[in-house]
Image (cartoon, rainbow, N blue to C red; front, side, top):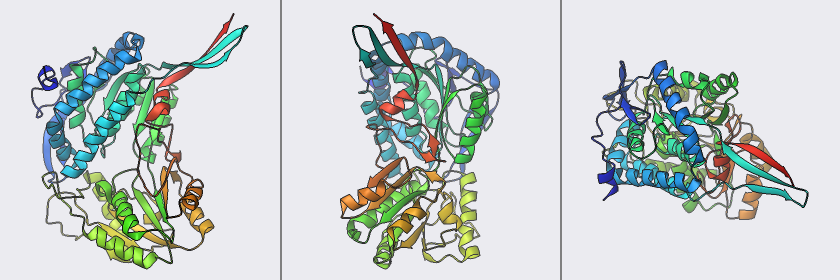
Length: 482
């Protein structure tokens, strides 16, 4: 029997909370918006405190028996889960395109990374570490699950980033509540519906809601850990809320990633890669390149080639297979970016390509022109802040120590890269960047092989990899006197 036939979803048009493997409705509903058309999407639940209490109680009740399964048994459930996602890949692709505004190319990337992430993570096993074993005693360090975990998932990668949290939490023995962004709740609710047919009752729950749902979960005494991905400002509020109950917390927050281009860089290879990583998902990725520092000897040539590449990037919605850039995902972020774009004329920035959008919006969708700013001041908002959109500054440098100082001046420290034919020199410089993940001649190359996380204001803890699994556990030292 095929996976699709065994785990059959009734449709991809109606949406419910998933609590204790039951599809539940709420008295109040809401609709998110398709950012490519600005049309309302289907109704989704608005969860209340009662819904939160029921979901936490179900997850608590399911925890002991789920915890006591072997890692192999839990992995077996998760393998069935990923098989069921793959069986409905076309339906999830269409739904993801509508809720996130992603063109087919971007949708394909997210779905590929999702299945790859699950498959690879399921190869990991947390094992006990033998610290000492003598005739007198043994000391073992082991990792035990925490209990009920909550994943607060952002709108830019509504499936992938939630899956990373879910799979890590469940594999090591926790139960889980997925809270999607109000801007992109649809795929998560359908993932929960699939999960209800696969996992034991209460293991995997999904709650949709408004802006008050996150605080209900962070304050709940029955929740043992919050894993949050989002902005620095909201991350601080999450951490503060978790303090009252001493919840475990991991925060994957914003980034203001740099790319430092050395004078020997091969422009034919480097420019397309750097530009792609700057405008991926229209710049709405925490790991996107946000600041590009180009050595003065090649600055003009790099800028010209960069602009030509950006000109080739077509914008379009989920129905446009040729589009590389989609819309800004929601009206809130669109308004923030309009304010950033308005600084072009207010601050007198030099535009190499694109520029401020027309004040009289005629087309539907939250689309903005991909824009390149030529060497703005170092203290300009576009350099200091995380823009999270398709407007990118190129800046000149001449001295190594100076460019490292400028790169590390940001309060954020998520990622950074150095580009050069001289790999040893580039690696030496990357090791001096104050960031959680650094690359030579690439950027945003992440995967389940190793965890990723931020330095400074870019977060606490890591996601993915073995260290990501350990983040969903408490360490326990076992001393045995012989």
